[in-house]
Amino acid sequence: MKQVYQLSALGFIVIAAPVAYLCSDNLVPPTGRALLHFFANQAQSLVRNGDLQRGHSEPQSLLVINAGNGRTGTASFVKAMERLGLKSYHMKEGIFETSGHMDLWSKFLVDKLVTFDEVMDAIANAGFNASADAPVNFFYKEQMQRYPNAPVILSIRSEAENAGEAWQRSLRESVFRFPPIMSSIPFSWIQGLKRFRELTLVVHNMMAGIANGTKEEIDPTMLANYYYEWIDEVQQTVPSEKLLVFKAEDGWKPLCQHISHVSPIVAENCREVIATGEAYPRVNDRESVQRTQFAMRCVILLTYASLAGLSAIVGLLVLRMLRYAVKVKCA
Image (cartoon, rainbow, N blue to C red; front, side, top):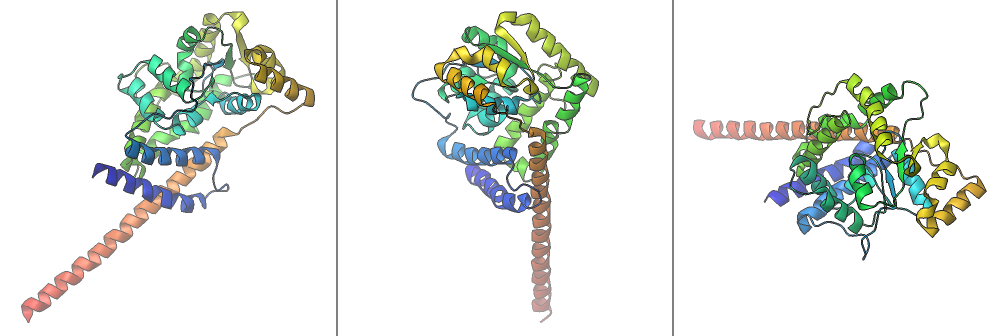
């Protein structure tokens, strides 16, 4: 019965989503596609009982590790890795779009029921050979220990001044807005989204240096300060010859010089993008997130409107029944 209830809620969202997207300028922004992938994966997980998705017959090793926090060009980095022949684990591609991984991270970070080695096994089995973005970046030390030959990237903001302030503002204007939205119906009906809300709150607190925190409101100054603290920690931890501090505006050349040795395919693709002068990917992920959130709010409004209409219909039916009962009694 619980599975029927969950599938019914998912079905409502899938039906309402196209209408909601008509409210936005772009019918299906990338983050919206990731959410639709997530809803589909939730439905599949209910049927398959949460089995983890496998991508290759043989587990993949991480060839590149990005220790940079989210909102530092990680979405562009994922596209760059794809262009060079690597499949990068990211919040969107890894957790949203890979079946079973949302629940896996919740078990790791929220419930403390699995180890990070088990998370890394699942990432390898799903076919990923690079990593980026939260929450996997918080465990770059463990990744380095498991994959000692993998070069490390530290992606940072492009602003020359007040980068920490720009970073915390970017967070608060995009991904930090998801938990309140997911607290509203119909999204609160989906068990998987309840889990995701718990997970995102823990991750958001980690971005401010708060371990095991679940606060929705995080001090902006604490966030801005942690941006610099995280950079200092990574630079002090990773040997300088193994680390590249990287901004998206730096382009292909320093990135390729740092990672082209990891595989012949990456080396060949690096030579090609540099020789042709191909532009480094630039993904406006914040805009995509905001459009998706706007669409989700449209779904919420549609839900309340539907419930209000249903309540009015039920009320009219009850009133008619009462009137009929009174007539029968009087007769």
